[in-house]
Length: 67
Image (cartoon, rainbow, N blue to C red; front, side, top):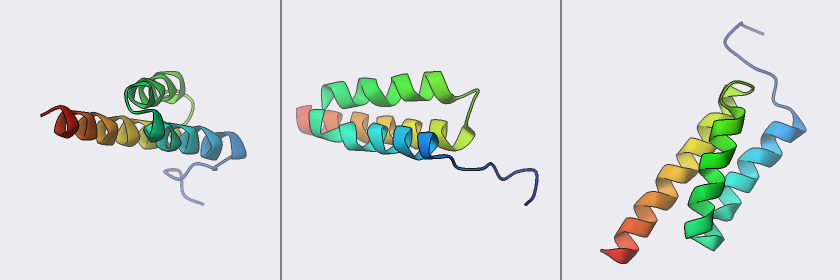
């Protein structure tokens, strides 16, 4: 395994699923993605990226819905 690859743990996958799954709560889902990103950015780049990706998607969806 190269240095750039991190081991995906069950916790990392669960946090990523939580961030993506929170889309069903719309506004709170955005907050969940941001919280997971902030808490995981030092621990797991993969989980942080997934959470950031979910937050950006949810923000875009919210803006389209409002606009």
